[in-house]
Image (cartoon, rainbow, N blue to C red; front, side, top):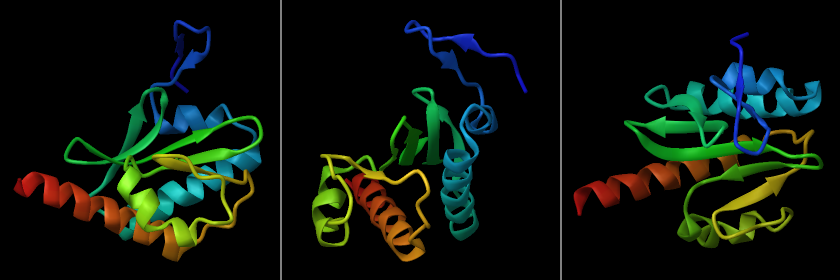
Length: 131
């Protein structure tokens, strides 16, 4: 594992997704790994990396998904208030915010939901590129 520096807050600064996952308890790491692996398998044109000190999924430098682990939950971000609003009916079991929602640390990945979130974000990025 690559040695980490610290952020201004004293938190470790992660240099890779693997570094981030290695810092988590096994349950959180397994859940985030399953989400990342699923997205990258379904959408091979996407890449994962650390941005803002958390795992993110990108397409050509544009943010598609962000993930983060906290003490009591994980967060899934689609970087879009419109997507959160459009899919609010399917997100009712989660705590939903403007651009993201909380998932349980031991979440059994809802592949259809994750796929639809990623597809919606990719469509949004495509529409932005056409403007």
